[in-house]
Amino acid sequence: MEISEKILKFKYPIIVTLIFSLTLSSLIIFAPSFLTILTYFWPLFLSTALFLVAVVFFGKTSAHPGSDSSADKAGEGLLHYVAGQPELTLDSYKSE
Image 1 (cartoon, helix red, strand yellow):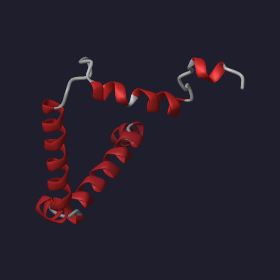
Image 2: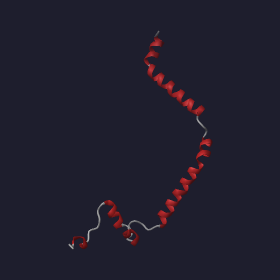
Image 3: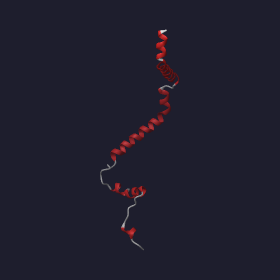
Image 4: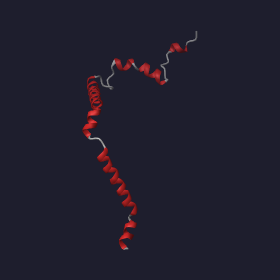
């Protein structure tokens, strides 16, 4: 009688442990192997790696954002226009 009382006391942890172990064992048994996943997704992994290499390469070879190059200044007008803050000049205040 004393053993069944202790089992009833730990009823919920036992149920959770059983469900967790059944879920884990079914995933191990029915899930595809790592090699199968790798052979299916290798084009995606390769293209992502090449893209990251290109990003690092162009990041190292292009001008740094802190440098004042003419390429940085060329796009500022477009950025202000897109942001909704167009550059105002004296010509815009002249009346015709």
